[in-house]
Image 1 (spheres, helix red, strand yellow):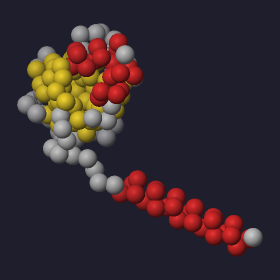
Image 2 (cartoon, helix red, strand yellow):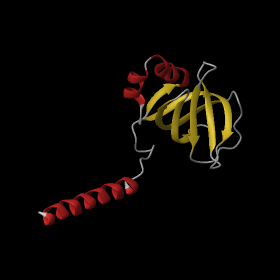
Image 3 (spheres, one colour):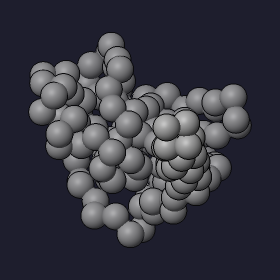
Image 4 (tube, helix red, strand yellow):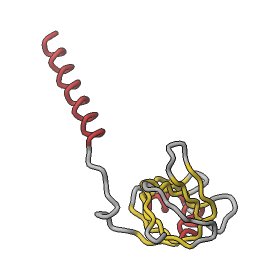
Length: 134
């Protein structure tokens, strides 16, 4: 009986180890290979604000191409450029962390950014962003 329990434990540890290895080494998704959903910044924000469950089904973890006006330009702790696109609502916007440095951007500039939607807090969050038109 002890051998059976030990064997089950070993198999379980191997399965957990394989799952962890796969999770950390799975291929990184590329925006170039993904089907883009094109949306305006204000429409995207409004969708999450009105019905987060429906918006999550439509946009969460999907590749988005968002058009909008820059409301704010920041730098995060990793030194990455973070753009906040105007949503038409003073309480939130579209926050996109860019993977490459962006030079020469100014507030009120119209831009198109691509990124994967990470969800909605008080802002809609895009990760792994790239600037389409500087």
